[in-house]
Image (cartoon, rainbow, N blue to C red):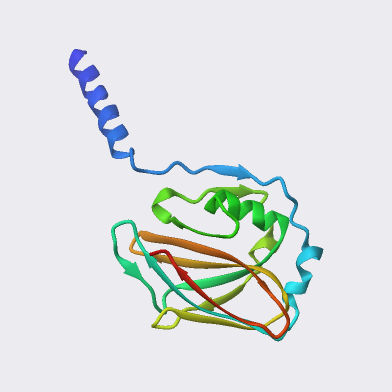
Length: 170
């Protein structure tokens, strides 16, 4: 009996040590409502554009950029602002590491995921054209080999404006 007790204690100890770096999934309740009507403008054709470059330095020092990385453009809304504040602890400009965990959100409305998407080229450059004037969140997803993260910028575009941005965390 003493042997079985010792084995059980060792198993419990080893499993708790093995999981010490594993992030527990967190679910966050968003208080702001996502109102589709408030972001309808986002689907309109416009005369503005966003050009940029995205590069990410991982926790272990590797730098990632290139054609495998996706950039998403979200229209500003109170829901999006609150959600991104939970991820980035900021709603203007910030970055996070994937190793630190990304929470789940409730509610998670389908309309929030209706974004414009672009892929970086081999140099890490991206472009969105035909955009209407408005407020946007630009989010770079820079993930590779179970490392990397995300970079976010909040920008405002006027009619006929071309904004050039850098999304680099180093």
